[in-house]
Image (cartoon, rainbow, N blue to C red; front, side, top):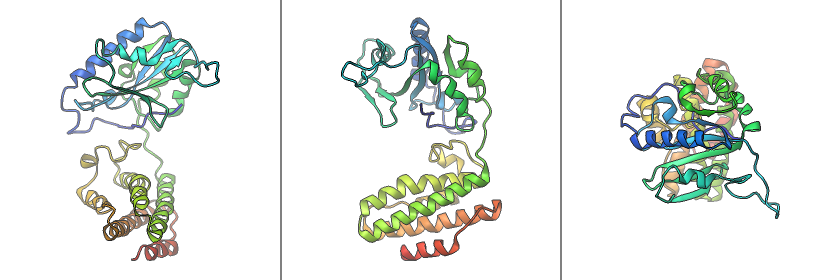
Length: 302
């Protein structure tokens, strides 16, 4: 079971200003359908709607807990979208009656994802209640539900709401060990980028800068600035959460795949990473590797 890829705290000013009427209506429809479906043990929402940040562009995201565990087919493969006779895609189709779902697929995280007629996205984790509900207790420090009663649409077992209430307090990451983890990740992945550039794998280096290096930079930056909302998606609401000077440093780490520009971006990225790592070291006495950091800068052409 995976936890949601969101971690907002208080609603972010400037986001969620448009009334999400279609989302509100779809959530109420989900509540009604869930209560009428005896094979469901519980439904727990997560994401922007649960913290008051939803707008007209928001998704509907939920955990749907089933009384029955998934059943394998005779050929040994799991039946897609089907749990002991419960077809999750058919169930979700009822959220948009009379209009076909425009996309139904299981994403790379194993989550059933749909696109409705109005282009709203939906992400639904269909899991067995017997194993899925107890795991919610392990989400503390990773997921924040400031209003659990609003997030829980159905709780037939009586177990879901008490566990959701345990997530109503935001727990920011522990500064020193988290900063050390970010620093080590930044060093490791930037070295990978340097080797890829030296080899001439420009597209791969470009991808690593964006997918492996940048999220760790933004997490460390947020940790240092005290803006750890949206921790699991550190680019979310960056324009509102992070000072302009940091956003400018982040912008300088991006580029196209043209060789000179990409190498410039990699050098700017590592320069900013080193500054963040040094700032964290001074504040929390985390470990630093000056010689390694200098050698890495040299490898990047600084």
